Length: 345
Image (tube, rainbow, N blue to C red; front, top):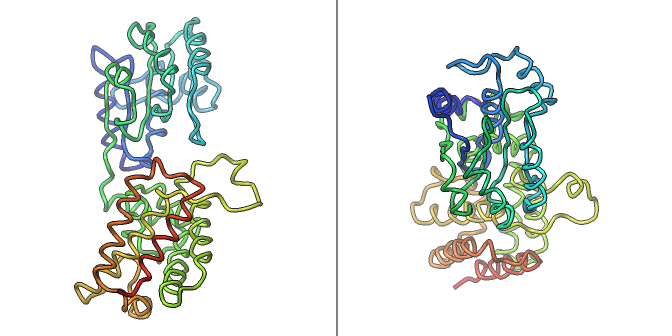
């Protein structure tokens, strides 16, 4: 278990060691904190024959089958590629859990990314959540409560997985990354405070794109060169990002890079421009994330401060429209934004 999940785990044990165990619990928090991992730990604990206040025993038949991924009373429903979870999957699950437990000691259903349930799938679950079968536990995970149907929310105990302590996260990340020289503080921020995604980011050599992207943006701003170089780097970033939920088939395609995903490329562009803006206003590079030398800053010095400010506002406005941006047009939005940034007055 990830070290920053320890406090959450102990709190969950207290909830499930009381006289009234919940029949359904929703684990929510930022993507990349380990919600799926702690959900499985909770499932293993719930199904354990010899569980105690400190956790599952690890040696009973249930724990052994769970560790071998052969437990007959444990179901996981999820969507790795971002597709919706439909009513057929929920109906099949309900048919399965309505049967007698194979090990005679309860059943657990995990629904990962519960915000991806279609309305009909969520409605199909309502009756079983309202009138649960004995010894059946539902564990739902979600990144945000805002995208969940209220009727589902009202029938679950809600449990938040908090952001990790920074020093604990850095200590863990430092042990996991292959490049020990990286600035984990700023890469942690770039990856939305997710230690897991930060490690994947570094070990996939994503951090090497930073100077490439800065140079490509500088070349465009300085000489109004073809923006294709910037777009191609952003596509590489999208394709290899830990946030990219594409399935393995999509990842293996050799044809063209995956189309831009704005929520992935947004922080890269934002931190580059905010570094330029901060340096121009304060006269210092000390607090910068990406642009940490005068050499990197030099090509941007002719951009007026008010243009930099407007550029940041445009990015923020685009981020608010991310859910409705047409994928095929995102490159045009970025090109228009680059042209705006490159104007000299």
